[in-house]
Image (cartoon, rainbow, N blue to C red; front, side, top):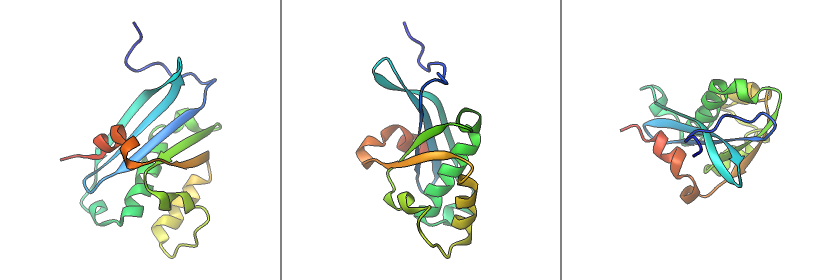
Length: 134
């Protein structure tokens, strides 16, 4: 019988799935194992009171920054995929934002090599559940 959370395989690509809600952040580090995608690490936390006032794109970007910082040991120096159900995040590097917070976060992200991929909200159940901190 295989363990619920397999050990990370550093020969395979990592995928980081992120989601934010009005109350919390959720992320899952995953890899393909034996023809199926399996979680390696689950992350979640409540939003701080000041973070609850962030716009939706700021909450989604905060989730990305927070998740990558927490699992940077697995990601630094290798290319990985980020999945989000928030399409505006896909334009984060190309957009000319007047938002200082988003610009600072974008500068932090240049340290990492990743591709952003959009997924439908219906495919986002695991991380969506983790972001609901009621």
